[in-house]
Image 1 (cartoon, rainbow, N blue to C red):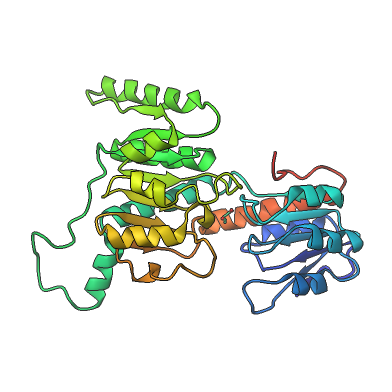
Image 2: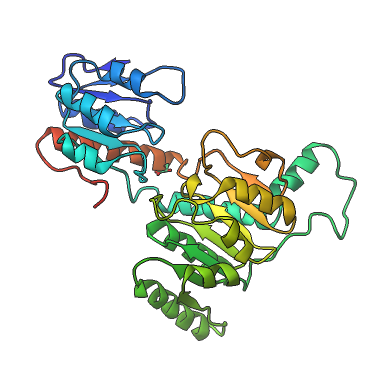
Length: 347
Ligand code: DGY
């Protein structure tokens, strides 16, 4: 699908995007916009190479694409200057390869912070209260009336939530869990983040002034976080250091009835080890939005009734997804007009 045919730049958009503003941003920057309408969800390098063609100034692409030496080389050869990832995460991009080919790279932070945190919170609640199991039961016509032991779950109020890698999204999630459920928080990150403890200290002052009980917030080592948290939520980027951060050994450190939430990146968790852990510990639960080898799931995961499984929808609200589209378009338009990307991946 082509818009503004004959524009002075050519921008390829590998998947159609929500909203309309993004298209206006590109066409008013003088770009012809070619939107790929191919049916297949994931485009391989050969298909993208074909779509880039002989002339392409910029691409808005997806996290399912492998933007490294080969594709950046293809884009460079077509006169490209910018690759804009329709995602905040950029583990599908090798930034050094982009730099080598002189391609600027943008991503979409900010507009998905609250939306993604809300889905992590929803996964936490769904897992703690066994919502999907109970819903399946209901739809299956199995409900025969109130029973004291029917779908008894776990209370969050006053428990401890462990946030691994609290950046923007993790901090927003922590606020939802602490302020909504009066949970105490443990968090773990490479760098000291005194602002988080400070925020919750001030929040505790407020609680106390209202006659409530203080909550605690502490930055701790991962091991301590895993051992002491009732909910562990992952909010770290996928890097070589975080691949399989949650493995068999670390699952074993967690409370047997803990909840593991992952709305970050699948490979942060050794999914096979998680399945074995869910099978061996029926009291343990998981809330997952991402998978190690998307779209596949590890064998046995789909059968684990103690797992809540979502298809990578954490940022899927219209406000956020159209905001991401606009930001991705601004990243391209800025570079085509000779400015840096509005949001540069890695900055
Ligand atoms: C991202 O932005 O990285 C999400 O995974 C999709 O919105």
